[in-house]
Image (cartoon, rainbow, N blue to C red; front, side, top):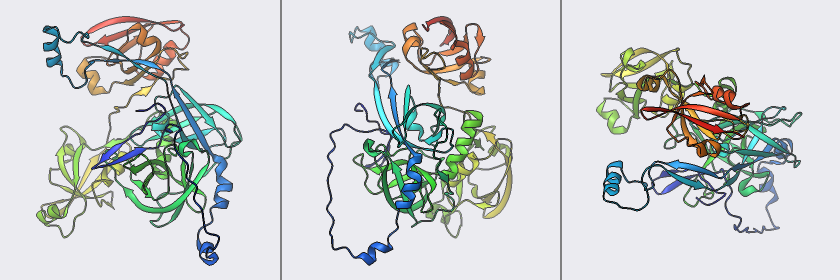
Length: 480
């Protein structure tokens, strides 16, 4: 990965889904296109006019510059791909000279840029999670060239949504529309900062809706042919009414640049995620504990169906709601609470939006007959690391942690703890390592990241009680 350039990518056969978060090296060339003066004026008049949309909404789009400080990361094995058994054999025979065990890896400063848009006059901004994730400093620049320090209130990597706050008043606010009402073939426009070129406007049409992408099970993407590029990430997608209907997130590319296919997160989903991040600091998702796949033509014929539809259950997790409710492997889910399930991509999106504890009625096909099965939705365990706000911790602790879920706590026989996922700064110098579990800070038990922040924000030194493998040790971190 080159400095100043990072892509969130998913490989589709020979094609890569490239993220738009960061700007590449400044050696790109600009090509100027000429146009004929003898245009058909009648034809031009029939095309949509975006001037009013841009004049009314351009000021609500912001540029987001990110800085991730140079840091030292502890790696368990200096030889990637070398398993522990082989490494031990090398060590016993004296090869190689480089010592085995945890090693320090130096990562240089990283800079990037993306886009965002203002959703409240007091400084709430929506953007992509991959734009701001891991940043030590955020600079938010408005179209009038004012700059503000940004703070991440919360982010959700599974939907690629983040909420950023700046201290400002009377800001221009964009109108929020409905992605549900968006139609294929409808004209849309994007405003953002491709390659750092602020407030760039591009337009096209909606190519498809509810598009599923590999490893993106929670987002039914809006596909468009709007030209978006690195730096557009987090910017708004508008309908012709000037309403935000999506957040630009990914492109379909073999080169890293635009190739005619771009993907946006539906604004309806983004607002749901935003509300949870502000209210809870995280996203609470429902689950029923089943593995599924789409029904193909061959499977439909094998199951005696007239046409392929629904999601066939391939696996039941032991002790989870699906098994408890009596679902069976081979059941085909064709509706959820009376709404049709057309394919396997729709089911996890709808279930995840339901609150844990609610009742869900599944209509399933079993042995060619429809059955109603009522399932009590459970909560999806959180497996994402939440970065500790380094500024609230006097900018010196430098750790990323996540709370252990109940199953992990039970297995480790711990009442509480935070799993360390990344270490930098003072904590790294003091010897804290990834996979350590922080149990207490200055004698106070820590269950959440807020507990850790409160324990260290006014301290010059902090004593962390850490569980490392099967042992417990104290690590003193100097925060001065």
